[in-house]
Image: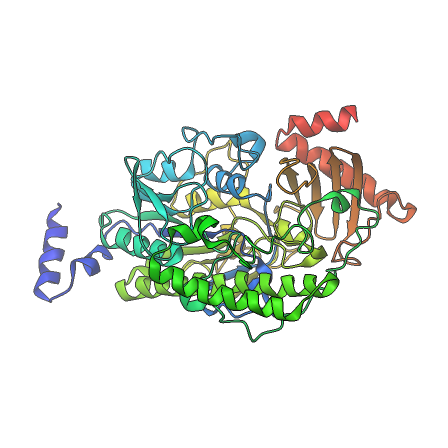
Length: 520
């Protein structure tokens, strides 16, 4: 320790200041990074985005004290590929993880967290990892086994030890987060990724939140009864509330409790509380004797009640993490990001789940607080893509991103003296983004497709089992109900979009897409 540091420490000890406070006086003023990534959290369910479904005051706080991004898109709307893109700053066809299962993520490739570690950051991942291989290049980790369980989940710790922890998963992840922060190396900046399980299917709320939203009747989306006319892939999917959502496993109705995997993990007290609530739900359904459309509407209401009740705990725990940062002084020099791995359907087009290049699954919530750099309350409209996350965080740490990262540093869009926050004024920033989805046919029979999205238009190429195009005018048709591909009024627009698509495919080196366009 240098003489000046010894003198500083002695002075602080004499004044009664804590070691944690001293840690905040380190000469290394690079920002800490706390990146919270939830699972399947729809922007439609976040009040900072104007949600009419529920309030999320703690998540909103990050946006109010930082920047709210209105147009953040994913490259492949699927859980594991989204996490691989976060770590690498690269498209799925480059980082090697295109689907949720059947491929293992190569953790030996270049990850932004490993680069931070090599540059003096203490790094850790806590919570849902879901990349089918153990983390590498982190100082520590405590990750859920596969998708994880909502109650009494198993965690794999550094060194591959597996431990079951009693409690509700979102609360446990917060406790583990605080434990890491309490015992971190205070001489280093840290990068901590918090992978939340919530609100992933089957949407199990914390016991204290059961029934919290039962008195609310949620509005049915205007597209709920979509007939998918002119959109063969949309018609062929298997992800509707009406047909795909299961009364027993998804909505917990008439459960055979001892044959239900989650229930068998419960403690006796958890079993009692859980069964008491869902037995009441089952009796309510029985008393109504619903069939047909009335039953579908009931299923939709139950889906939202369980999904949104699960996010109550998510929001509450994010509030606890933010309060911890405040109480320790860490909030003064910590970047806080909240996002989801992709968007999700809250009944739009009659669906749940994600996968599509259509807006509710393509667009994901994203907000960032960066004290002294990001103007509080900023609204950012230019297109950001999840390949941008890694190079941006490296840039914030003063590290030049590797040239082979395919994303761009978006800090100039959000810095107080940056060049732009509004669409159209961001010189040199992207005007179009590229998307490619692969997983087929299971589990939801969503056809593989790729495409280009601009501020106003979206061109999509489906390539299996049928080959065809879709085109949407997002200004005239924001709900993407009318495929206008082939209409004479859009011929010049189609030609321009096809040119942009070819350029993006070449830019991102997607040889599979290029070959499809050449041969079909």
